[in-house]
Length: 341
Image (cartoon, rainbow, N blue to C red; front, side, top):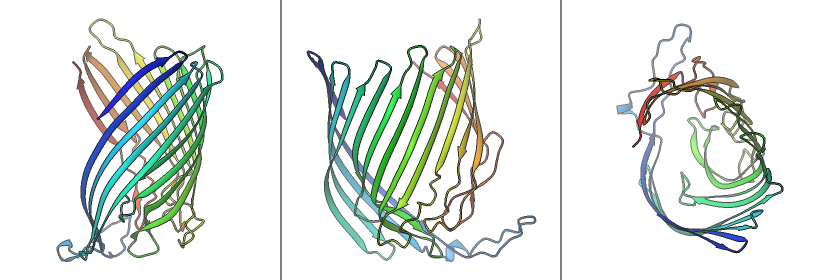
């Protein structure tokens, strides 16, 4: 629930937002592990592990979290050139973890986090911004909450000659008490990491090439490091986090005529670079390019049929995963019929 109040004080515009949030989450996780004999992939005979009914789980956690939050945000616009945003959030967390052996840990936390944002319009088309944000949320494994702190600096360019938006940003993110899979153990077990750091660059372009044709392109570079001095993986990159991600998407709308409604055809590509398999950085996953497609048809003014296909060519590659060889999802086709009124 939130309330918003807008006001003007001469050349200063004000937008005040206040809200309340409450969540009560319970989850029970169990993991089983058993060795299995090797198979010949050219003539596989699947043997699997032991009978699960006779196998006891080797890890498991019962999670019970209740979180009550209140937040306040004030946005001030000065002469339509400088925008300042200040926010405060207070979270009261009642967290409980129960291990497989019945050991229960419980704790209450009160944490206030803040955020600050400044945007300056250099010209009507070009603006630059800076933001600082803190975060807190329950960790997956312990009652100590996961905390984060991020700095971001960027620019936005919206040319007057066309309907387009170009953005570029650099950021520095630090997190503490995150849960990771320790692949040095067999089988892998979850553990907490005292601190990690991520730095990166994000680029995005959105453009209307013509009234019928739209283009979206994005690229991100992420450099991660485990900075916890007590971790045996200190100095390594985080597992399962590719350094390079890129995507491009294009859609074309064929305007309706007579009884035929609008039809939109879309196609795009996603690139995911290699990533270390596990925080020990022992091996890497494959880089891959996947093709996606989409089609929508306006059956009526208020009814649209959509068909989306991910991994159109059904490409297969090895993905990063701790303790096992896993592959990307295959081709997936979904159809949606949506009506609005």
